[in-house]
Amino acid sequence: MQKLFGNKVKELRSESSFSQVQLSERSGIERAQISKIEQGKINVTLETIYKISQALNVPIKDLFDIEDDVKLKPFVKWAGGKAQSLSKLIEAMPESFDRYYEPFVGGGALFFAVMPKNAVINDINGELIAAYKCFKSNTSYNKLIENLIEHNNLHSEEYYYKVREMDRDASFNDLPLDLRAARMIYLNKACFNGLYRVNSKGYFNVPSGKKDKVNSFDLNNMNNIKKYFDTNDIRVLNTDFVIAVQDAIINDFVYFDPPYDTFEDKATFTSYSKDDFGKDSQIRLSKLFKELDKKGVKVMLSNHNTAFINELYQGFSIQVIEAKRAINSDATKRGNVEEVIITNY
Image 1: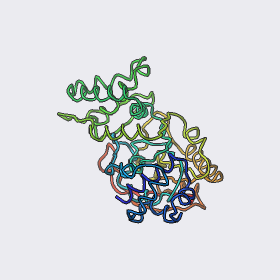
Image 2: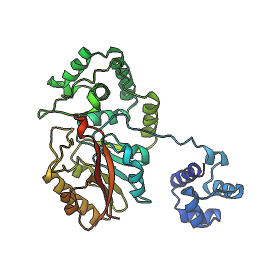
Image 3: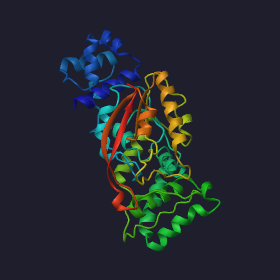
Image 4: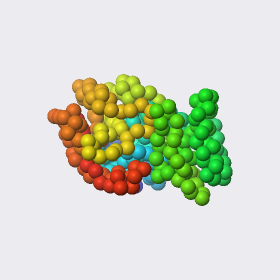
């Protein structure tokens, strides 16, 4: 409750275009105390609540127009998903930042856990981004849900492969966002091991998971994601990772979760688009990391703990963690691997 109340105070203060110093002067409450209130670190008295309401010129009830803390979760299973290392990533994040950027958003585990109010998310996978864009349109979102229900009802082995073949048609990219998005989500939930993979031509080629029934979405979670997009400033891009962060400035936060560098002695799945992300791309990303660092942007990056990655980011903070590889067509190649969390702060 303290955190929810603090978030509401910060929201109303921002809407009034007041700084913490200005709110302090208007309310007679020390600026340090206001900061702690907004961070949810202290319990407030009735007198303090009254002073804040008077300073912001809002009824006291508006300060309690708060909802239970909603937990969002990814709507697809994605290679490199961060669900199992989420707590360590959150611990490694900066205490404060302005705009949030995630150029390789994938399933968005960290993005949905943090729920930033101002964010830019991006991915090179056009089908995935079509789904994210549906949350920004009431019409597209409603059609997305209708299409997913239809996929669930029609699911069978024959139907799965019929839907899988849709991207072979030359007009596929001209289909509405909701149709492409629903297809991607359905295939993700119905295919083998939730593995999203395309061949060199960009065609989805994962075999069926041979499920009798498929429930491709959690309606409550989808509705909560839609509400989150409606009430916050979220930009959704489908471009190169360099372009996705080109307007990041000092005190913004960028989280890079690229396709990982491969271990020399292990078969590692990293490809979910037709464009390989090899050593040259890793070098290009490290240069961007350093450019953002010079601009005063706060940057965090995840990758495999390889000698190559450690060399690229020498001089930055490198934390080694153990993570579980959950997606691989060969079950014997799933298991624990070492990853790194690299930060410039």
